[in-house]
Picture (cartoon, rainbow, N blue to C red):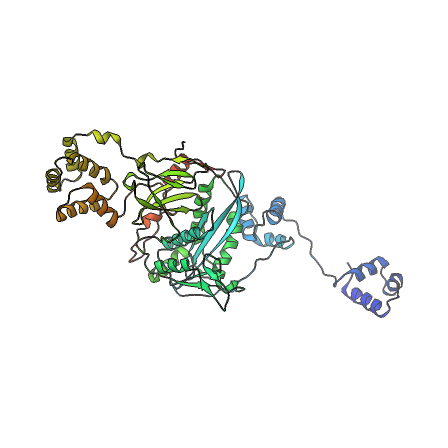
Length: 510
């Protein structure tokens, strides 16, 4: 290699004597004319690069590392984890020295800033193309992160419309255990109607959502990504340690593993706070506001009238709802881009179906319909069943039989039919209300319960996939709405497979 002094001399001679030939310069310095040509063609001075020393621990993994760097785009920490799981017993210095010789894209940095407990959370999302069931599929991953504790909630969906965004934010509140004072977002249309500084306008429906949950909206100014760097930077970790190189059996597998990754993130020591987000979230929860009793229902949630045969129409197909809602109006919304959820007028989740990909399909859940056998029960049998279920309400039974002498069997049968749809204590309160108002009819009981209490339907799908959500002090909302167990996931996968994004409804027919 040419010495630095020779390179400077060659450059100087040529600049002062442009007509001097390579051979004349070589003769003056005492080097070959090829060395002169090479020196003059270089843009910069020569530099010494130490050749990589053989490493018996690292050498067997060189090809694997090359693939992870250049094809899978893994970060150094991920590569170190991968090769250690494959048997690498050497140190990390040799690994990073090798990586420095390869082309690795540098991550864009953001300036962090700190907020007190419960003050601010940040929300964002990013689309990814992943391998699901052997097919490349675009999914959206939402990220909700609490600024003080760095406790993060990931949520997946096939959609990124406003309904999906609001659902993911609600899941973030619920799984964090409360609502922060302020939520920082970007200027997406679901949040901002006009992003200009001179005529800025929030999206009106987003303001309604903020009012329902009681937090202050806050946005990052265009060109200032540092202001939500806490939520931007974790996407890099998600991409390099979860998305890159991964494949999934179906969508439920993707959602389940996303939650497993979330648990891993919240239980690792964070470089800035020097502890785990799981430990620090308790301080955030102490400062959070309580969640409202019901989830948000906006003007764009669609309403449907249930037919007398307990069906509603959605996108050209029909879906069953529980029989007490026949001929009534219900709310419908699409969850995670593939799950149709049905809510009562009291804002209670009463039915859940995977969206059918077939136009004209009829998706039936048998439990939504009454058991015909009970209709043939005698009045004596019905009285016995009522006393077994409500042993302390003989007075109600006597007055019902006296007031409804002609059709007492009908009312008693209907009352027993809807009794299993509500908690026992709530239903007992409805029976007491009948005694108070001296009204003994199934219509009165049904209306009283629908207005005052939430149904207790046994649904296989709730709003979230995370188990064991802790309840903050003073929290009013029942977080069981957001929970689904591992057994529920396994049962749902068995009964309603979601393979290759081709949805098979529970029952379909013409």
